[in-house]
Amino acid sequence: MNPNFVNTASESRLAPRERIVAAACDLFYRQGIRAGGVDAIAEAAGTNKMTLYRHFASKDELIAECLRQVAAKADALWDRIEAAHPDDPPAQLNAWVAAMSGHLQEERGCAMCNAVAELPDRTHPARAVIEAFKRGQRDRLARLCAAAGASQAELLADELFLLAEGARVSLQSVGPEGPAARFARMSEAAIGSRVPAE
Image (cartoon, rainbow, N blue to C red; front, side, top):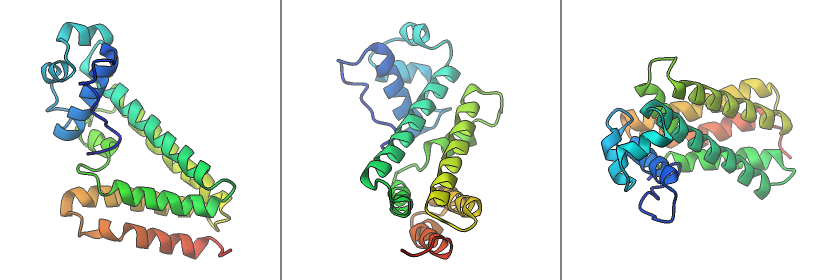
């Protein structure tokens, strides 16, 4: 199960809004956004459609909120990496590769990539969330590459970002034994070619 989506909807101590978001996130991840209907979300949250619509004017707004939560959890990962390797950007970069490798073990891959494939309309409210998230991740990676002393830090960030995105999609299309299995090795080679050895 994707750690970005934790199904806590059954926990009665959560307020209705939090139960709705947790249930929606879990259903959207497991079944897809289009398949995760409002009735199923309300039932999984232990509530009803009226309550759902009291908190979210539309399913589209609920989708955007779920993806904001995914983004917040990804930001927390960066914070954990920094805390684990303070003042050591090369170690943080290696920890990012390890974390991305771990995410490649998730059942349905990247929630953001899955969502963007289901939401071709660029005016959908979730698209702005996805695009801001992906840009932010790439920019944070570029800052980390620069802090690690990488030559052509922007290019290295693009290489790593594309490797991660490609690995996530490849995992879904050809399985874990495909190119995604070599994500860590390819990323380490890219880092090794641009980040000076200590």
